[in-house]
Length: 157
Figure 1: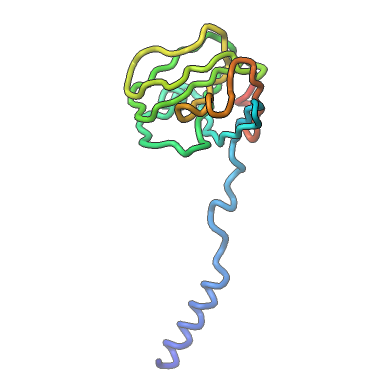
Figure 2 (figure 1 turned 60 degrees about the horizontal axis):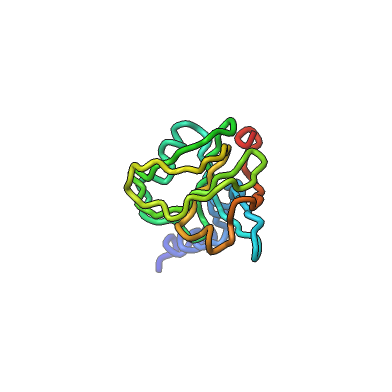
């Protein structure tokens, strides 16, 4: 190896040792919904759908959803809400929560790729979508209380 090549190799090796941390190290903490259910807490890492565009798209076109992942839909006020599964490939449970973050109902096993309206008869301000069977497996039923973490205040009001 010639001297210039050796110097270049040493410089490159030095650069590799001091590489900056990955971009994810600067990412905000994940948004979490914790359901305080029996037999224990169930924590879901969620994407937040708080704008009309984000709520309209929801989980459409996703081919899969991680085990403890989901999406929380945030509305300005409590109202009786209805959802469909148009262009949604993953079977889901829809967990409806009141303004005080208490589960008011669950739609279990919503069939993918359908336009059938789904909802509960009680007003809700939040809806958490998770993989089908998640609610049953974790004991999430009407009356279960949830807490939110790292969801911006302006979104949850």
